[in-house]
Image (tube, rainbow, N blue to C red):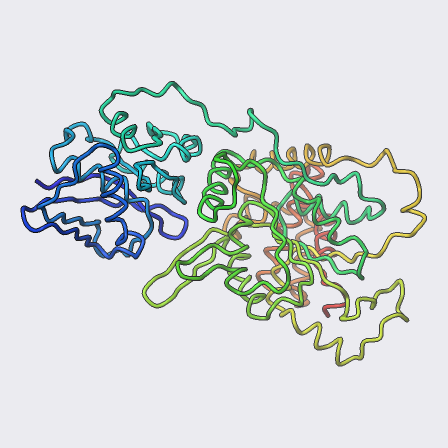
Length: 508
């Protein structure tokens, strides 16, 4: 008799609903899996047989076991189908009542002794199953606490095959559970504090603007001037993630295997890959395709030091995620779309030797040709997508040796001010930060004073800004206006935004 049980797998970082069909045909013993299974699935026969027999169940010899994973047109791989296939075999052979499995979906890898091992991407699969007719989901016990973050489903964990069947039969009832790792349970991961920054008062202002509207930032300065020091303090002033963002980030970490405990990720990611990172490492790729750094920094900060030293192909590939908030990787036969809504913070030296600055013009030993080649590594379209340009100069030895300035605001103080500014955007009906504002809705979010309107028209007529640059200029001015609690954008907001969007002399 044929039996069907719902399960799922991953497509990129998103889950897919897969139906496991099992039929037992009296014939010579064989085990056949159809539905474009990968190597990990094709090797499941011996795992399943050993797990069944070591758990006290009968493996149906003298039968041809036919398994189909539907839809059959999807390529599938991994070990998440071990447990649903084993339970389906037991139901098809009459060892358990098929009626007890109605409304269930099952995920899990089996060990030879019947233990249920954890699977990667469990959170993404369950999120997809929530949109199906499933009422209950059985997952490995090690994935249980993380799976509870998905609301609207009854999620139960099992550590062995026998325990899984006891849960399905109703012989074991889990006590009410809460989601470990919720904001009320544990604090966010601490980031370096902004109060440790000495000098750089203008840089502190620019960091606050960047965090308020999540505007991309490029810092240019000589070696040791504090670019990395400032960048690592930016995540600490970003507002906390909401529940949906936490689930999205955890889902990515789950697929990449980047967490040590089965808990929701509540701290914003901070990714700082080396400048030698490959295209696939930065954007994503491989076989099977895996998220790159732009996806692992989703809802967080991506810090790219030595910006011009990245491969040209990698730099140009940043255009799509910076503009769309996602990246699509296409190959022959498949295409994957990964989310990549990150805050870009880049840093670079003013020249190859690093000392072509206004404070020490005689130290630079780079020829005009060398400088021209260095500047040409970053294209105009990439520069146009960076909202904030900050020139960093080294602080003096006196500033380093002086006692700490107790009047400097901490990250917590700045963060509260940023949250208040973002609340003004929420009150306007915005769903995201100011960097995501659309020009089609500018009548609602960009009311201009008479002086600001004239300034904007003058700048456009003089050809100083592109059409995309005009939108980004207005978004940045909207953020500055929110920081001063302004209802409309004034000329002073546009002037500051124009100044901050002007690239450093090292790039022009």
